[in-house]
Length: 386
Image (cartoon, rainbow, N blue to C red; front, top):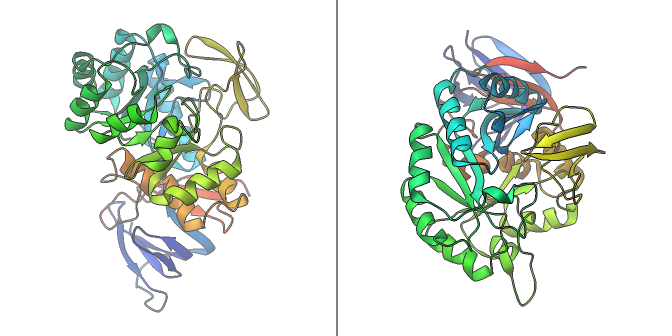
């Protein structure tokens, strides 16, 4: 049944509207927006004092509630989908770790066979984080699977994924990285750069032929030096590229995250979680890929070496963190968790914005950006406890 939302503020794609009414159609899609002085006929759902935003888009997430995409278990992926709505996420890219060709190929086949069956957050594609990385900034990635990029492997994975492979991350200094970038981006796949000790020039060479995203900026990459800008310098300096950012307060200090946001603008910062299987789980011992990990005080760390091992961040909490840090306006924060990540992966035709004719996937937020409710196709699928 169609209805209109009456709320204090609407984060629409091209404007933030104060007050008014947003139509949700019989088909579960967004309809027209009407200003406050144009009260419509029909059912009105009152959301007094609340903010209406697009559903969040997490384009880099490995696991949740004890499950990991690399488990290659559709039931686990469905559990992730069902529970991501509690984090305000309505669209996502299941994200792999480095693995063997066959492991990654099997994950592609499983997701391609079932995508569209998920009953929670919608799968909009697959993100391969690797395996074409280098060792110095490996993080929690397993170097035994690292190798040079292969167009043949990419083609096989994309075939198994039925075209769902939307983004793949590589290290720019690997042999053949520039040619691979040119090949994959010509096929419509986003090439990201990360887990790399590349020079500024090596990163720029990949960007010049189509690479357009930096993977969890500052983490897992050669740092900024005033004479050697490195990967971080490339992420900060190059125009028209999008920088992933983990805003849990552990991966990147608030002051540094705020600096990058001020420099690049909300249109080029994609908030991500990089969440691993311990997300929404208690502290304790876990596994990431093939490595033992422990979670304590909101951080996931490798038992061997103590480096960070993904996160346990929920994307809804990145919004409130940024607001608390005074890092950006509410409008900019919402954009960085919706429209920008969707555009960065070429899925903004399906999600990330409130537009007529789009699926009515939206959030009800308090003025401090705290999540109150999540809606899919115009129907409430999660409500926060009072």
